[in-house]
Amino acid sequence: MAVASPLCTWLVAACMSRTVMAVSGDQPQQPGLRSGRWARKRMARAKAMCESLSVMPGYGSSLVSFCGSSLQGLSSCLAFEPCQEYYSCKDPPLFGENCFSLFGSKGLKVGRRQRRVNHASGKAMAVAVQPAKDVGLKKKTLKKQRRVVVTGMGVVTSLGHELDPFYNNLLEGVSGVTEIETFDCTDFPTRIAGEIKSFSTDGWVAPKFSKRMDKFMLYLLTAGKKALADGGMSDEVQRELDKAKCGVLIGSAMGGMKVFNDAIEALRVSYKKMNPFCVPFATTNMGSAMLAINLGWMGPNYSISTACATSNFCILNAANHIIRGEADVMLSGGSDAAIIPIGLGGFVACRALSQRNNDPTKASRPWDTNRDGFVMGEGAGVLLLEELEHAKQRGAKIYAEFLGGSITCDAYHMTEPHPEGTGIVLCIEKALSQSGVAREDVNYVNAHATSTQSGDLKEYKALLHCFGQNPELRVNSTKSMIGHLLGAAGAVEAVAVIQAIRTGWIHPNVNLEEPDKDVDLRVLVGPTKERLDIKVALSNSFGFGGHNSSILFVPYK
Image (cartoon, rainbow, N blue to C red; front, side, top):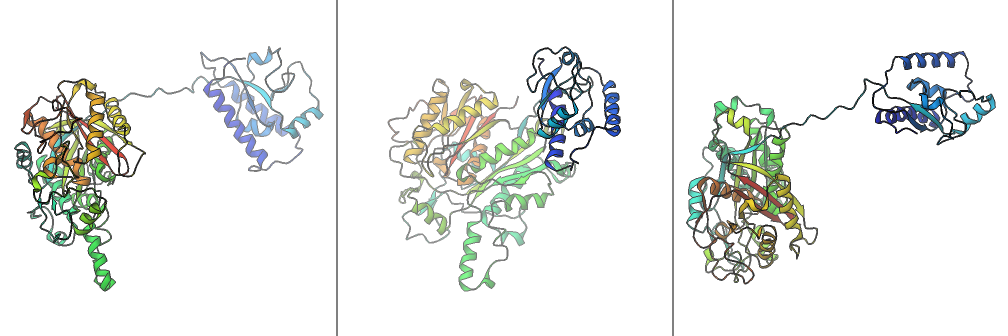
């Protein structure tokens, strides 16, 4: 029996669906309908159509089966002639007996009664078909993958709102952690944070919005527009953009907590006292939406919220939109502003925060033996991602190239990392594989390291598992100076990574005074900045829920 070709299988499948529909009642049949003049005319037309089909070279005939024996239903949807194997058939066929066929048997008489029995019972019959010559499988054209580059950056942090002052402070080991001043937190066991002391939206956000919006949206809009300005996206340049291929994907872990909290307080008095914008301005997606509305960008627009891994998820997805050709330009990153009573109180209740209130600048100390929890931070980071040829065409400066990344889930615990770091290792290895990067090429890692007892070591061991054979590997944590910016952490740390690529300097790990016994200081950056010719840089971000993310940047060449 010959092997069935894909086309033969498709033709018979079409026939089967037509016949089964007729039998099941979708196309009512009249029981007992005889093969009279009308049926013979249909067979004649079917035979004529068959003669117009050519035989596809390289395919043998096919022996296939179909259910039911409705001559009318089959001949109306499929027209073909039995192939030579059918006429020379000597062995019993796969289904039925005596080589019975729709086309009648050659040299074999089948009575009227037998035909009626077959028709009523739906007995399976073997049919040999040959595919048409002009219907073939089209080969998928391989396209060269579009490359993604970073052409602009914007930040709002406790160490500065401009790129160079922000990174220079990091290089000098300056801490942005201070006592909280926005509200009275005397009764809280933690009274310190990476709080932004001075911030103005002048020139970036319209006054009518700056009075109503939550801080996370104000940080987002400001950082986003600063990234555009840094990328040379003037009004004139933006007028030339295809707005349908420009998008915004900036996320938030906590959203508009202050706006929502204020609405609850107002509701205690009366619903009439509530801010009519409290619902839209509290949602995590509205920051991206408002920025897109302001710019008129009509491409991909949404937000992702995966706790403290939010920014990396957004950056990776934004880059994928560009790679797939759905966008040429994407603003991507994260923003959070949770240093308010309910935010601070919530993390205190989790017993996750440092209580080193008497020495705020020493509180965030990743990998140090005396670490006692993370320090909350706030702010925003936004990258201007662009398709390489699009960036070159408009003459944009290119800071670095985005290679790719990966996301995984620990599937273990709501807040604790997997004891073996399984999800982290899987995430890093997938990122390397999908980006086509060799382990030995990664010589710089900006770690998630938040200054917690279990999290720091789990990530460190995962890094050694993946890159332990690389003597050039250097690892640091930006959180040692600005605290943990929650959903904005990954984006601000991506800016630090790109600045390291750009300047050739990596910032120190501050407060690493008594390293944990399980860490090797030859891997961790010391208390002062270091020179490093970065080959490939990796940035990790992990979040509650077991969310893991790793993204990769390289110098543009």
